[in-house]
Length: 142
Image (tube, rainbow, N blue to C red; front, side, top):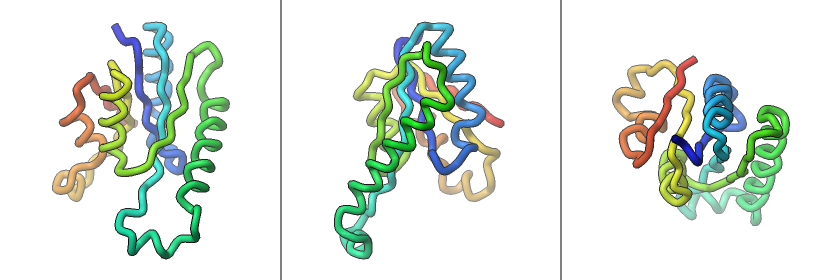
């Protein structure tokens, strides 16, 4: 049923993957699929903001995230599951949606926290992904 599963993780927030990771692993095993594990490095937005960081900081941030992502996969995902490591830059929900479309992802597995009032007004990343994804999205609550 699923050929490619996308698992977005925030390497600095255990809550972004703790509940979703076991579900993604179970689905990958059950369907014999590849698991695409991605993390997003925020962009600096306006040039005015970027000028406060040292030259080459963005590249170093991506390299560090890539190293962390490989360590995360080595630690948390069994060797019998094929994994693609992906580090992107930008807005979290936009990168998830772009990548899902580009890779023809069949299922996105996301962790979601209990919504607060501000989330109802602004819309968290998970809600935006659910609303705009072209594929199935499984939202896993703690």
